Image (cartoon, rainbow, N blue to C red; front, side, top):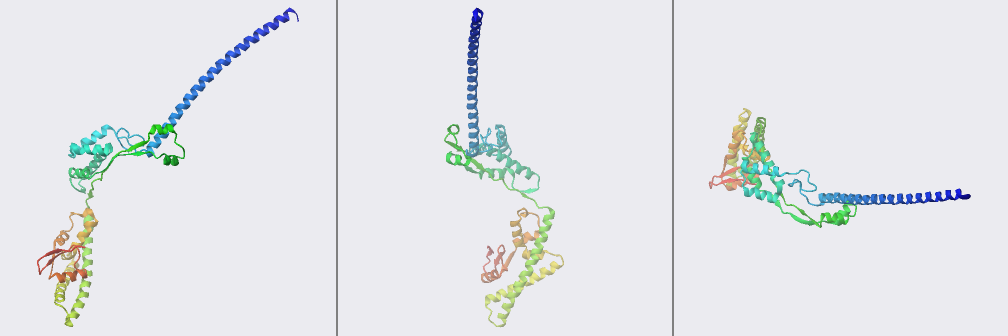
Length: 353
């Protein structure tokens, strides 16, 4: 090969060594880069795991953690409508200055019912007052009823409850890891709450409603008159037969006389009804109607219906004695709500169910 061949081999060896060294250096750099990338991946994984654990914890706290919605400052997980300090202060001002609630009452409401209790009370108060001010509703003055609403509030105390991990695992379909449990702790607090009942307002009846109620009452009285006439005639037939047989008792004789008089009043009232004069019929039978209709239709309580109905409710029905009263009650002629005057004793009796 000669001298030149030996030189070429030497140069080749030197180049090979340089290349090997360079390759080694590149391998070290690449290894370092890979190590750094791995470290970053580990840190990202840890960060992702922490974020995942936080989201799981937040979901559990929202579902199982007893967080009350509308609590001040957001109320934690599960709160949908965040109540601010400004809202609470405004509600306190409304309740104290507009509706006259004392500091002591408001302090108790806030301490037991929280921010949502205060805001809810103010909302109910304003809704009531706004409707009341229209003049279209019947009810007590706002200052009075709002105080009564607060006084009648129902409070529940806060309580500490331990997480039921077995139940939570089952419902989530997964095993909650220790990191999540550490975030949540062993228990949670169910805050106290307040239950307020909005004060009722009854809408005033319209003129059309009043006219319809009057007409219904008149027709009801006419129907009762026909029904009672049939009952009286049936009873009179029995008593007259006894009278003919001379087997009628003294009490039955008194009853017969009362029934004859009553039938005469009904007949006269029915004649007036045919002439579109309704007061006599209402005076006889309007009491039961006005009691029934105001119980069923609360907005008619105190409404300006035909005055004859209210006069009827005050009418006294004179009956000879207690024995006759009992007989007439059994027949259904004297009914609950009627005011009966026992002529023998002078006692006023109001029949009840």
